[in-house]
Image (cartoon, rainbow, N blue to C red; front, side, top):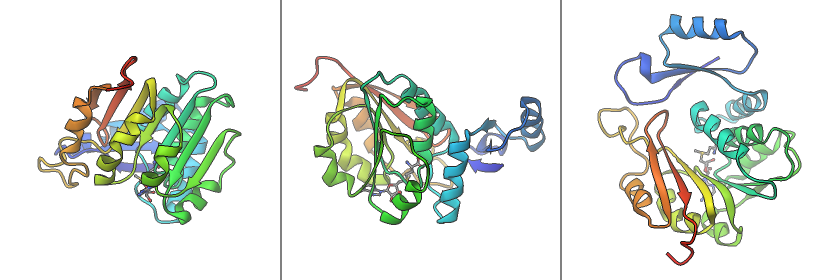
Length: 234
Ligand SMILES: C[S@@+](CC[C@H](N)C(=O)[O-])C[C@H]1O[C@@H](n2cnc3c(N)ncnc32)[C@H](O)[C@@H]1O
C-alpha cells in the first residue's frame, strides 16, 4: 500500500490517496480509506505494481500517480487497431504499464516510450512488455520530429522541457488524436508545497488553435487535448 500526496489542497483528507498492488476486497479497501481519511483508494494492476517496485529500486520518485495512469489506460483502450501511442519520459515504466493495462493484451497498437536516462530506461526494460512496445533511449527534443504521428501522446517530461516540446508534440498528433500532459496542477502556486513545474505554459496549450483542451484539476493536474480534424495547416 502506498500513500501518495496528490494535491496542494490544505485539508489532509483531500491531499492523500491510497494505492494497493495486491488483492483486497472492495469493502476492505473502502474501510481502510475511511479509517485513514484518504480521498481516494485505488487498486493498481499487477504490471503497474511491478513498475512502482522498479521505481523504488532505483530511487525514482517521479512516476505518474495512479489517477493519471488510470486515465492513460482509459485513453489507450480507445486507440483503434493499427494505432500508435507515444510516451515522452518513460521513467521506470509506470505510465507505460498503465497504457499496456488499457490495451488488455492487444498487439494491434504500437507503443513507443522515450527516456533520456539510460539507467531509468534499463529499469523500465526489466519487465515483460508485450509485442508492439518499444523503449527508446534518447532526448525527446531531438527524436520527436522523426518519430511519426500518434493517436495518443503522454507528455510527461519535466518542467519547462514540456514547453519546448509542445509544438512538435502537437504536430505529432494525428487529427482526432489525444494528448495528456501531466503535472499541470494550477493550484501548486497557491500555498501548495510543490511549485508549478510548467508555469505559464498551460495557457499556451489551451489556446493552441490545433486542439480543443480542458484542464483536469485533480491529482497532479493534467491537460487533456484532442487534435482537431482539418487543422493540418494551423
Ligand atoms: C515524470 S518522469 C516520467 C514518469 C513516467 N512517465 C511515468 O509515468 O512513470 C519524467 C522523465 O522524463 C525523463 N526526461 C527528462 N528529460 C528528457 C528528455 N529531454 N527526453 C526524454 N526523457 C526525458 C526523465 O529522466 C524522467 O524519467
